[in-house]
Each structure stands twice: as structure tokens, then as C-alpha cells.
Image (cartoon, rainbow, N blue to C red; front, side):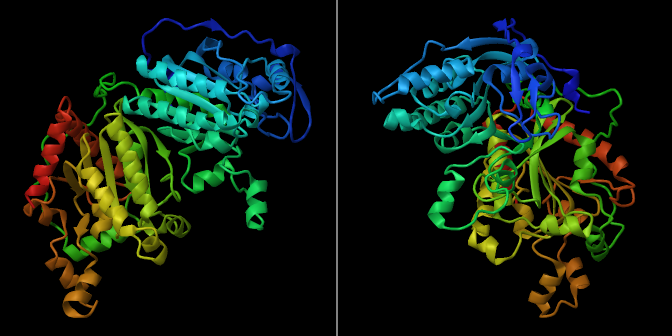
Length: 564
């Protein structure tokens, strides 16, 4: 169960606006798929999911606000921004009047102030019933003003996006709204403020190519159609059949364009979590729980009881605990965020948000997989460029919101393949190292298994680097080292000893700062003993940098590199 069901955190402030007053009992809603008709009250309590076929139904702006806001309290803004008819298009005023009557709104977007889980937020909702949410001057102006006011009052923004694209009746003025809204989003972002967009069905055209996809976190409703050009236009242009599920929310998730696909029943909880995690720096507190397992001091005196080759075999074992085993025990409520916003979502290198005793942190982790099926899915833990670019995106986001970064490393190396080289594997690794080296937030890197070459180093350029007792970290595999040095892979065991790849070796070489005990071996049987030690040590690390200036954090990390 998510901790946010308990509403642990609230920001102060007076209730905003009046409660939305909607008579749902006299409204009939027809499912677009099975054509069954229900009363508004019936489908509202089902989050507008058809009780018969579970199809997601369109939701009006007021109904959407009522679903996600605390007690339905909402203060509308900029309702005076209305009709604009720059081209004097025949019949356009009549079309606007019809849309206003049909939707019950004065324009295609409603913006204002509300609360979610006690967090005051600027919120906007595009209404599909108003000319399919098409963007004209009034819509662009309301969204721009909403971001400007949010920037002035240092408030987060949540936008529910739904649009068929530009409003043709306004011509080039409609197109200019893309520039205007994007510029307003940039100012809000430069002020260090949080913006979350929720892409609903459909989100297309100029809305997709402007404010909808510029958010810090992009959510998409399950089944929503999302894209720039419409599928019919694409098919006519290229003369090819489109793949099944093309431009759906799931398609965009797999191709790295959205962070998460969310179900309506969990949407409010997810928004509450994100608002909490992105609350202003200093409003979170690192409070030790009474049942914390305390381990003081740095564990540097753990003897090297096993040979280097034995440790190589241990970290390659399918029985070794994964990074996710530690994440689930060390942090609360980890939520994975997906995609590099360019090509895809790499399953070998994951990242997301988590809580460390109520302190939001950004977590990165290599995952190899347990079963053979999962190992293929995760490419045996070998990231491709999109994995490193996702890590870069999440590290920059952590810096923006002053979140510590905790990285768990376990990879034999970056993927060696044609597609990785075509997409710039070397550049992606270099940019990841450079990004982490310059982050203005504390960064901690923990090797929980194998650390292979530059593929591991890409997310290991931290203020401190720790290793589990039997983990390894090396320039390449012992087999590869043997082949280069002695022209044969047969001397891998000799190579492992010569390479100084154990945690104990690397402490002596001043490459790492801490060794974490494994209590016999980091398996799923011992992870419950390892995790409390790790939890306490990570807390101590974060506390050491509490109050440190960004300049101090960067300089401290740089001086660590200069020792090598």
C-alpha cells in the first residue's frame, strides 16, 4: 500500500475556491465502445471507466477536476479570456457557441488553483467536448497565464492534456500558441518549479509538440492516443500499414516518450506522490524511524576471505541479490520513471523516485534479471545509449529539485552491438560521466555486483563510491584482460588476482570509500541483514551533505577525482 493513502504530508494554506457543483444524476454517458449508457453518478464513481467493457470514457474538465481535487474545491482563473477570431472565419463564432453549450465551458481548457493531498497546485484540464481540445489563442493564453502566475507564486503545475491539434479557424495565430506556451513552461522550469502533464485521449499535433511534452514528469492514461501527426496522415504519406498499438500510451512508454502509464483509479494517488516528492527543498526532514538498525562508522576492515576469482563467480551467480532487492528494503515507495525522450526505454538501467525516511531521492540501478526470460528483457544488464540518456535526464531532474542521487551498479559493461554504436554509445557514456561529475546535489554510488568498465563508470562518478564485500570493479572482464595480456582467455583466474578488482583492493587503492558487509554472501537469504546496514549508511551520507552549498558538493566530488 502506498504511504500516500495516509496523507502524511500537507502544505499550509487556506482552502481555495468553491466546491465544484455538478449535477451528475441528470447526465447520461454512453460508452464509445460497447454503446451502453449510464448515469453520470454511475460512471463518476467508476472513474469514467465503463462498468461493462472497461473502456476509458472521455471526461469533461469539471468532472476531471472533481475526481482529482481535494473535496472538489477549485478557484478558476482567466475565464475572461475568450473568443479570438483573427481570420474572421465563416461560421466560427457559431461553432464556438455550440462548443460552449456542449461542454459547459467557456474554452477548451480550464485553469485555476486547487489542492491534491493537501498540496496547493495550479491545475489545468483540456476538455475533449470543446472542439476536441483544439488549441487556439484563448487556450494558449490561459495556459501561458497559468504558468506565469505559477512562476510568480512558486507553485507546481499539473496539466491534463487532450487535443486534436491546432485550431484551423485561427490559422497562424493558433500555431504561435506553441511558441508562447513553450516559452512560459521554460520560465517556470528555470525557476526550479515542478510541472507534470497527464496525456489523455487523444493528445496530438501542436499540443504534443509544445507544452504537453515539456513536463518534468509525463504521465499517460492507459490507452490514450499520443503523437504528432495523425495515423491516417502518416499512413497516407508513407504508404505502409502501421503496427498494432501505434501511438498508444503503451507504445510511447516503450519508445521512451513518457514516464509512466497510469490507471485512473491510481491517478490521484500518483499526483499526490509527485507533488510531495517535488515539494520545495527543505520541507522534507530526515527522521530516523524508531526501529532503524544502527551501524556506526565506516566498514573498511572487512577481511578478503575469498579469492578474486571466487568473487568474480559470486557476482555472476543467478543467486546474487539484485539492486531491486535493496531498493525495496532501503527506500519507501519507489516509483520507476521511464524513457530517454529520444528513442526508447532501456530495461537494463532503470531510474525513478523514492523516499529515504520521507526525503525524496533519485534512484538509478542496473538490473540483470533473475529468470532467463527477464535477463533477455533486460539485455543481461548491459545498457544501451538510451539507458544512459535516461540516467542523464533523471540526474538533471534531481539537480533541479535538489534531490540526492543514489546509484546501484551491477553490470558486466555497456552493450557492444551495432545498434548501440549507431546511437552513440561512447558519447552517451561520456555525457553521463560528465553530467554526474558536475551535479550540484550529493551523489552516492554503490556496487552491489559486477562493475564492468565504462559501462559501470557511467553512473559511478559520485561524491562517494561504496562496494558490497564481495562485489568487483574492473577495467574489463578477467577473460578479456587475459586475452589481451597473454593472448588467451585460459588464464582468467590469474588475471582476476592481478587486476586488483575486489572491494578490499580498491580501498587500498583509494578508489572507493566504504565496504558494506554481506554476512556470508549477498543472496536473497542475507539481503534482509544487508539492507538495514545500507539504509543507515545512506542516511549518514545524505546528512553529511545537508546544508552544503552546491559549489561545495561539486568541488568535493572533483577533489575525489583528482586523487586518482
